[in-house]
Every structure is written in C-alpha cells, then in structure tokens.
Length: 116
Image 1 (cartoon, rainbow, N blue to C red):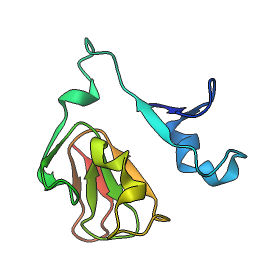
Image 2: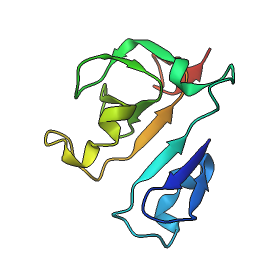
Image 3: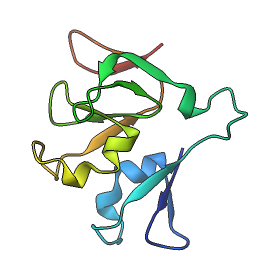
C-alpha cells in the first residue's frame, strides 16, 4: 500500500513508514490518502467488505478500507469517515488507526489481528 500526502506535490509513504510517521519530519496537520489498487486488480480495496464491522461514525457496514483504533476497543471507521476523523467529536484526535484492507479475525486471547 502507498500513502500520498494530500498537501504536498511529491511526498509518499509506504505502509511500514506510515505507521512510524512520528519519526518523519513532515507537518502533523497534513493528511495522507491511501492510493488503492487499480480497479482491474483482484486485490482492489474497493471490493473488500468487513461484514461484522460497522463504522462508529456513519453506522454502516464497512466496505473498502477499515480503520481500527489502536487504543480503543471496538472503534472502527470506514474510509470516508476516517478522512473526516479530525472532525469526530466523540473520539480523541491523537489516537492512531490501523488500516485493514481485508476481513480479519481478532484472537480472543491476545487481541491480535489474524487474516484469513
């Protein structure tokens, strides 16, 4: 996955670097946008459906990228609401979110995410 800064003309991060964005010297107020697979790809994110997960903001089943709060239990956002997450009043703005492209299971013991 590739993340593009919506404010800078030529500033992208890979998935690994995006999760470590605190070490980059890039303005905190810049928003990054996921650059999806092409529509012809069989791994295209727009086709993913997370059947058991509902967005806490719009209350719809999550289609496409699912954003899981890494601090809160059971707090997920859809891609559209995540792009507006700085305006969500009932959730701290300093919480990090983990992008989940495809349906996964959470381990009942440790809470780690397991793909299937």
